[in-house]
Length: 349
Image (cartoon, rainbow, N blue to C red; front, side, top):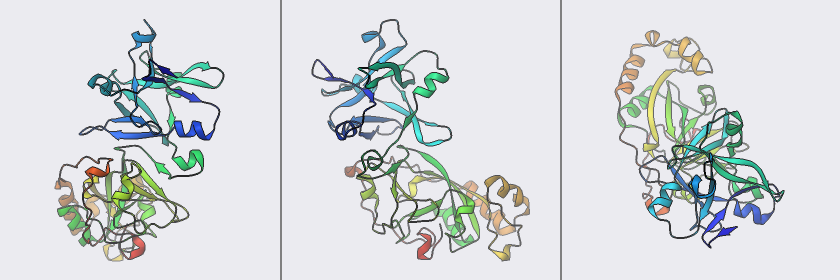
């Protein structure tokens, strides 16, 4: 519905159809130099989702409307269209949206139904209880999950995830000094590859020595269930993605690939691998907690302790904003690194 030819109400719609699925697709736009986002309607890309003032519609109420703005946005509208993404604990594909303009008010699904077909999306400024938290959970669905076609994605812009990378002690020392660099080939392109857990590194990496725990700025991941050896950052960006998630049946266990060293925010040595017999260390357990208690730092060989000290003192360059537009893309010319490529190509993950 439009108000004055430039505003549309926003609903959670109960009846699915191709038209509804098309209207439900949103374009994610990163706000430069921040971790905030704006959302535009995929069907009408000039229209921004924004939060209205509560007093405009519901005087003395804790609710405010959330609508699409169809005219050229002013600075005020752009401010009201800025949201912070909040992950839902224990649900990798669910988020909450908080209004930056309105003091982190939650966007939620109102109780009242509209002509028995949908619920209005609104902004809540009152006390937050379990009911409001439940109604503010939003599931991220890729186009192919919604309509059976398109691409599949995971996560949200600027998402940071802790992942693991296994490599030789020599390559780890190089990473500590110069940071990661993409390999020259791999199942999902010339990228830097990571596993979800230390145990998942086993069977993927071909080199052993050190296990690195890395905070990686994945952002939204493009899910690939088939090999995509020609994948590039540019191709990811076409779908608003900054990384790749390899998943079944292409790989037996999920793995992630990023194309820019700046996405590797923090590097920490958490142990050595049990399949490096020259180390003489106890077997490294699958979980991070067991890993750290099995091979405590004081028991590491001297070279591992020196490596750990080097990594702890390493300060990576300030990461560049991962801009979800093709215009901001660098010309990708990845250089060969001893450890960055995909494991099936003879290097570590």
